[in-house]
Image (cartoon, rainbow over all chains, first blue to last red; front, top):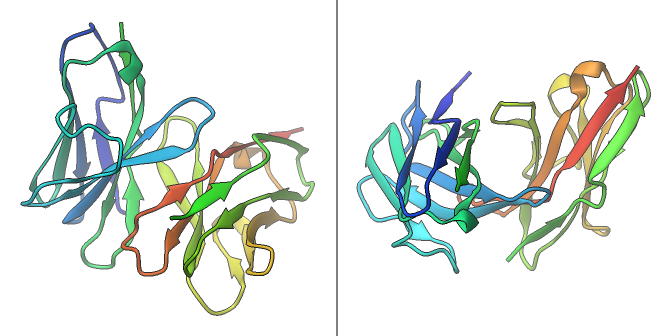
Length: 115
Length: 114
């Protein structure tokens, strides 16, 4: 089946540094990818929709200058958490929509811990 | 906008027993409904989905769900669970034709015991 690779699976960083998370569709092309954030015991919250070759669409309340999204190719979207703070610690999950059949596939997530 | 409620955060059940995981939604427009499963250290995997047609939907691994519009529910059922069904289950909703923009519930941890 289709695979979405998300890297890294876990990252620990110091407050004030930036962290980049990658989301790759390994065997299909994805013009649209989605980035979610999940807090413990909470639902996945959609942060933004990443569109290949254009600007991402952010959900209300999500700081676009804080969470930079780049979707430069049909198989890769990146989320950069800039100047990370402890409150940014969370589980981040991406999903990618296969252009050939519109099916959605999820990555395995990234646990970010900011000290 | 849509919202999803999964009232049960944890459901313990013995192996070979039946199970029902509850999901209720709210929406002012027509919706598509989904159940996803997340095994430890893995991504979300689609179990089943309701788009239109028959309200009883069958999915993978012996799971099924029934769309009840009057009760705004989409409960997930399995007649006999296995240890391997232990996982986190998420109910999700999107506006019909909404381009895969999903709203998720808080998840239900299914723990199957011997």
